[in-house]
Amino acid sequence: MNMRISLTLVGALMSTVLVLPTFARASSTPSAAAQQAGQDKGAQDKGGEKKREQGGEKEKKDGEAPKRDAAKTDGNEEMRIAAQMPLYPLDVCVISGEALGADSKNFLVEGRLVRTCCARCEAKIKADPAATMKKIDEAIVRKQKPAYPMEKCPVSGDALGEGAVDVVQGSRLVRFCSEKCVAEFKKEPEASMKKLETAYIASQKKAYPLTHCLVMADDTLNDDAVDYLYGTRLVRFCCKKCINEFRKSPEKYIAKLDEAASAAKKN
Ligand SMILES: [Zn+2]
Ligand SMILES: [Zn+2]
Ligand SMILES: [Zn+2]
Image (tube, rainbow, N blue to C red; front, side):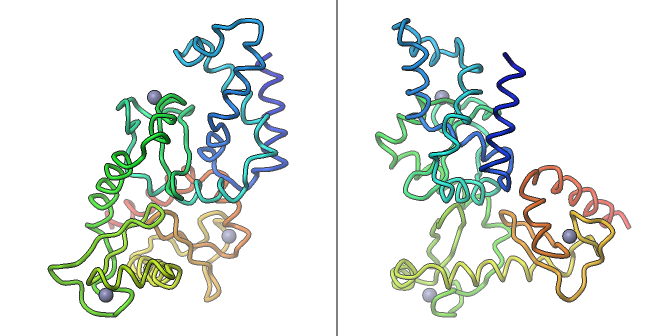
């Protein structure tokens, strides 16, 4: 049984979500699919769904859900979840306070990533997201502010003074000199987000600890090297192909980068 599940899982992943990191795969179990799985499985047994929610047969059914869902899940949504994952500021469920394990629910609310320990917490947030989103916003601002790379407003170019306004876009903190600039930003966020990305890259490039590609250790980083932002972290590759390789298991590569960074610090 276990064997069968892992084989079909591998098959589904190979065909549809090959470029996505591990944590994004867990996202392909929105409550609708889980519910459907619950209905199918629990048709003869009315208590099936309830039991599953209490953690009874949770693991088994969660394991099956990605296969069922892989084909109909919006690939774009998975990409957005994967992009926001390294920016997500909490390692516990925002409702229950329980640790987010491998079976955590990862989903978007108004385009923003939210993570919960279970489908019940997910439903609670979807019914009334305001308080939760505020909590997550505050955590993002707290976490990203210390290394925020811009001293100027990306809209007006003015210095960020006392009255600077903090906005969370995607799972990223962006800061503006005034509410007026925030209103401008909302009309067309892409240009400002691009400026922020460029600033993050520039602020880390000088101290970047590797002279070779993070994926292909034999390849030296030349003038045509690719600068990539993983969360707020600069990662450099010899070519775009290596980005896809990186996305398959970002944790592994980030650990390598951390190692190189701490070795560089010692010298
Ligand atoms: Zn929960
Ligand atoms: Zn401004
Ligand atoms: Zn490379």
